[in-house]
Image (cartoon, rainbow, N blue to C red; front, side, top):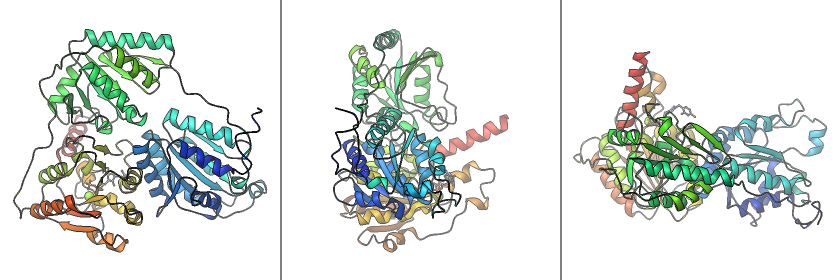
Length: 558
Ligand SMILES: Cc1ncc(C[n+]2csc(CCOP(=O)(O)OP(=O)(O)O)c2C)c(N)n1
Ligand SMILES: [Mg+2]
């Protein structure tokens, strides 16, 4: 059969073809804001045959929602209109790029005749140029294409391949007239990446024997394991090895924290001194899909000796300081699962969660009491979406119950991400309870999106920490009293009502007694829950405080 005929019956349009392939790879919902240039996409998404359309309040939020969805389902999609829409989404797309999430960005474009005539169209810069916005997206996607009837079959497969190979966003533009034309041509089947078999065997043997010869060793499973959908295999390796494991901030909850081998969070010199001491003293540290970012390493205070570090990446392995390309993480883990020798657990301590703190009923809410209450509130299998700022830095050090997932945007760290990302996670996992924990400053960026939970009948539990400003910045900036860290005072607990979340349980709490009571009600509520927690402006958990002290000591040393 010629590759220019076949798979697509004449009745399948360009956009229908793409949407049906996106559904095949697990994308059942597409977030977005409509526009006249993307009507063909919007119509197809509302036709009832493909992924469902989830309208958002703005494109930035829609793309954050797609990011949150992708964290749960492995891939997500956002649909925007030309120029004005797509550029609003770019910050979020960059975040998905940084944090390795395959997000498909579908953009409606002016029709081809208008492009060819260099017409001065709305949503353009008025200069007759039509490729500029795709170029602006280029650095934050791993591949892009303008979809036509002739290339749609091939380009769809290529972009799907690229998105999953690199675990990064891709950009697909649809000229409005071409999107509705019949798709022509077959896809050339694209295989998946394979490891070099000889190298693979050698590297697996070396890793297994190095671990065997080590007096002490541990594993650092990383977020790329989750992104690549290899948590099951990683768990098998941990069990087969009998080795203890710790996680860094971005990697939190990649494996169940409720198991004997888990020793806690490793954050360089800033937290959990016993974990640091053990990890850094090991003869071998096996890192799998981790990134040594500033936050992960406790502001680069971690000291992992490269000579003792074995690092398994998504497509390569670094051993004794030498990187071997052409090795797939899935193949390396599968080989290790078979070959690794089990050893008895060599460590003498196990992870502990935050200390239980119970202040008296009428006391104001301290950070210690708050994070202790929050960590006890998390149930098995909950999804916790924690915003950049002090809340994620506090909750990140609570030990999670069985099956619970913790999501934060620890590398890109764009405030406002968590509220729509929690929406995306809730759409992706309607059977799991979603807890959103956000600071007031971050919530102000993207709060409108709580209305989509109500619109879709989803029931999240939302906590907004009202500490009257940008606490993390108060801690890290030269002058904590600088006015730029103050924000407008809002009555957060009144927002759900104004935003159409009519039957939600809401509460505003400022004492420990009120907090405990609200949490008891929330635990049994049959509706969504929105709790505004008021604390003093300086109530911070230990991690950001240590970060501040460490930063200060570094400044002084310079
Ligand atoms: C989009 C974006 N703008 C600005 C910043 C800088 N920034 C980092 S944290 C933060 C304040 C967060 O405040 P809040 O959500 O109230 O959390 P808190 O630290 O008070 O708990 C700001 C402005 C950022 N990370 N992202
Ligand atoms: Mg705040």
